[in-house]
Image 1 (cartoon, rainbow, N blue to C red):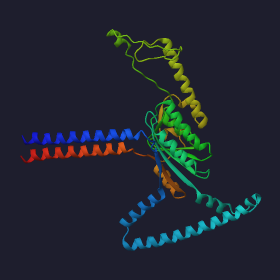
Image 2: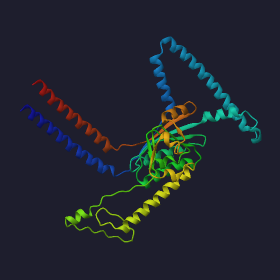
Image 3: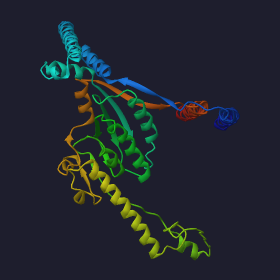
Length: 370
């Protein structure tokens, strides 16, 4: 009896909350349509500072007081020397700028290169692709932002994880990456897990492809599949009519009777798409023997390097850390601005979850102690 009363009380609370939330959401949604909201913003994180912080925390935990003091003293000395070198290198670079172009070749090129390195920046982006390449919306915002500042002396690193998907969606994603290379800005793609099919289509745009030893790459092929319910409809005396204007408006359908002519045309379209894919890979990676690799097979990193599908076996973490030692590394992420409806929806969901957990814990407690 006690259980029924508790359940009734909980149910009444839950219904009241749901109704209240529904009313509030309805009002907000109607008001939300009146004005356009900002889509989101770019968040920038300097990875050098993050890596330094991790190192400092580790040193503080491991080294004893005496060792820590000696280490900090040595670190200050190194920092002072580094700043001195930077100042001198920049001074030399400014001096060279004032000289005639012919004289520049005779000056100390080492200090000039060092000055260029000091100004180098690396922009890191991440692309986690689904079948529709939905992340392309964020990617285009991130690339637009970095192109407003990046120079050919900088570098863009894109970490890709995707097994491929829709041709037009991944075609757009590849075109977004081409915006970087067309500006003569070095582009490096890192693959830690998988960049296959449309994912590899994106990766091959890069000047350099890096992959983990067991990352999956390749799958340079095209696939299409669909069920056909024509015989099922026919068995149940259900008619299906498909009206088109244009001989090839529809080739294969899910509900109509498919013909050999329709299949032939569909295969012709698939083959044409495959040829476009092969040409795209060949143009971007001429060292690849396209006839050998464009059969739909996939390779692990250790085998992919033999096929010239990748340039080096290294994880994204290792590469980014190595670049952070010589350049300023920034992680860019486009963050969508949550609407008021979404915030309230998340809050309501959290409240309902808490109520459920509280109710379940009461039941479990009463059962345990009864």
